[in-house]
Length: 404
Length: 137
Image (cartoon, rainbow over all chains, first blue to last red):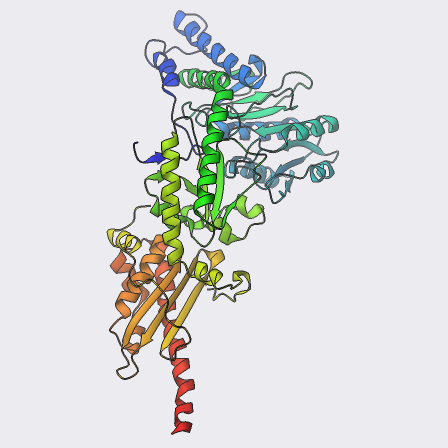
């Protein structure tokens, strides 16, 4: 077993060697511009792009013509939300999203608010899921778009996408979902779920960084968006810029591998994830699951280790790559807004660790990580005044803490 | 974030972890920080009645590695000092010794606060005790 062990697959994933192999010829011998219509180099590149488009569409039940290539999911989120807002401005100015969305969605919505749009940020329940009744009530005749992520990047919970899609369709409101964490991990079908727009990223599914896509529905309803990047009119005018041919080949190949291997892969990842949780729970008291267990990605686990601060925990497992919701590990020095949105105290956010299990993790690694965590958490609790107080029966929520 | 060797050393081998009898007259306890802020330090000193020298110091800390290292270092420094000498320990001394980066300066401030809180608890106990002793005499 090699260290460090990578368990941060929600942040990014290793490129699958099969994906890299498919990409390589498109850097050197097949380097053409897919928009060059008058020579062999261009035709070869265009064929590769067409194949990639089809591979992506097949994974999500779409048709190839509904795939718009972008630089990644942040751009896709921007294009979907701003593109719909601009295109449908005459119909209305209201957008609905949720408090636990990725910043690419939240900050885009905030930008639109400055430009006169109205945005409703739905709260989530304690399990991280939105309340469908609240969504229904939030929709007005001015609502043009609902944007709710498929699976959350921090806690891994799967939103009730089919129900949201059905509701939006009934109300005649467009539905965008950030599918980054879900696509390739769980079955996604844009028609079954009534999804109108969906953001896709390659590097979260064993493809390369710097390439993504936006699914844009073409019929019933035909969705139109205003381009946010102007130029040569690529991607049917929706996103100008020379196509990233090797990236697109990689994204396509990554999608095809996920589609073919998903049933097996889901089973394997779920087994490893469940084993990690049950080993930790057998070895430690007072660890808490963040987010719904039932509605969850198979590779995702977010736990809080009470009375232990996240950064010190990461320091103790420095040969394991994971993330924490602790303020100390974030650039803003604020604890995770996602965990706070669940109604958890800041102390629980400070104690949280996100595990993202991936294609290249082994059972041996999971065993190692569980054993190591049990050891380190035990040591840090010996050091923790909070653990000592809790063991003495003191209710920590009733202590008058000396704050700055 | 890269930690200095001294922070790593204190994190891996924390000095003087534990608790003293908080009800003892010659023990001062300081508890600073709050769980929702991500840092709680408990620092205790035990003062020798005759000499006025801190003969023992213990800590427990909930917080990041730098917070653990700051409080561990503080207990090392406290032992053998008089109470007045202990009050002269400044957070900047801790910053320098552990090479703390700017984002971790608050950990050293918390350690200084913990020292001051422990001493003030000790002194409060002593001043309460003093009149009582006089009455007995």
